[in-house]
Length: 85
Image 1 (cartoon, rainbow, N blue to C red):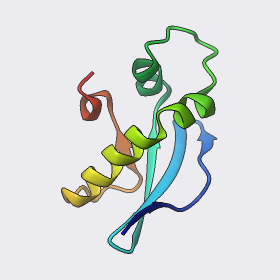
Image 2 (cartoon, one colour; image 1 turned 135 degrees about the vertical axis):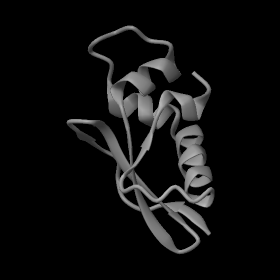
Image 3 (cartoon, rainbow, N blue to C red; image 1 turned 60 degrees about the vertical axis):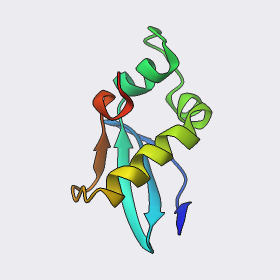
Image 4 (tube, rainbow, N blue to C red; image 1 turned 45 degrees about the horizontal axis):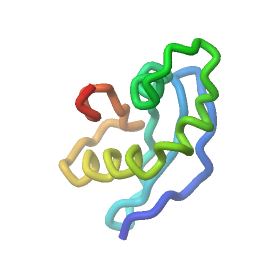
């Protein structure tokens, strides 16, 4: 079972969100730098939530794979390396 549990929201670290993997909620965060890289944007005023929404399927897929691979940090921090950037 894999779903998104709570609404993504802005934090000082970027966008926080959560996913459920095998009945466990995992809190995650993705930084502005990673979101900028995903969107290929250099705009300092990038709308982080809109960018998260645009790439939500990819971001959540990476977060679920990290959880399945045994990453135990909380929140799980998605880095550019997780996306091959």
